[in-house]
Amino acid sequence: MSARSMVTRWGTLLMLLFMLAPPARPHGDDEMVERFNVMVRRNLDHDLVLSSATIDSVMQTMAGKSLGERTAAWARYFLERGDVQYLYGRAEGGYVSRGLLALDYATDCVLFMYRTTELARSTTAEEAIQFAFGTRFYGASVEHAVKDDGRVDYDDPAVLQFAEDMLKSGVWGRDVTAECGSTTLDAVGSSRVPADTLSYLPTNNIAYERLEPGDIVWFVGDENRPGALEERVKGTLIHHLGIIARENGEAMLIHPASIPMPGEYEQTGVARVPLRTYLTRVGKFKGVLVTRLVEF
Image (cartoon, rainbow, N blue to C red; front, side, top):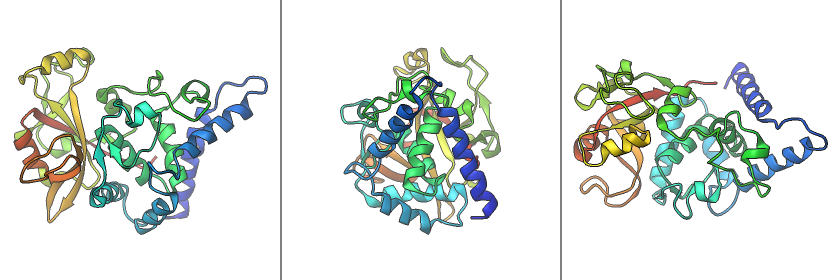
């Protein structure tokens, strides 16, 4: 990594931490700094996460790779470990219910995207945790978003609860959907997204060869399947996320699977499948959006 890139990376991290500083109040700043540090320690070096030594060592092997390649490499790393189970974040034991930023042995699609991109954007395990709070809780105060014991509150207003808002934020990449095929407008919309305002790639219009390692794929639900319109009323069109890796020229989807796909993967958890095959076999998505990470 060049000296300029290192300065930029640390400058960005310092900027994020500065923005997270709690409102000034008598005798309060030291308390909030300590609470932030408690949160960081709570997400490092325990039996629910990879050790800092392991993370730092893996990061060294990725030095010199592009951000997208690092993201794909982290997705592949979790895949090849073979011990990462699927667990919805708000379920008992999930990262949301535990108030954790890192949970490396059980994940859902949102946490998997969070964690792989945060690790790819960081140079140490500790920095990845700091980065996680700075992006997931962008603009939040430590006083309101972090409990005394270091647990984070995913119901804090600063947390983007809907994938559409995450897409618009730009935090998780530049929208390159139009660069990856022929787009069309979603004609139905939702309670949060007006009809004919969201452009996506229908499944038969995806230029798979244009997808790059580390691209984030956001799956648009097909409103014609049972129950889909009700989901849109609740506010979401995006029903799944995954990371792209390229293997032998093919765009592969690495994602946390909640059900097996016979012939492709027989268990739940982090799995790999050709994106084209996944879209064909699952059948509940009418297309995708694609974002591509950029260095902050």
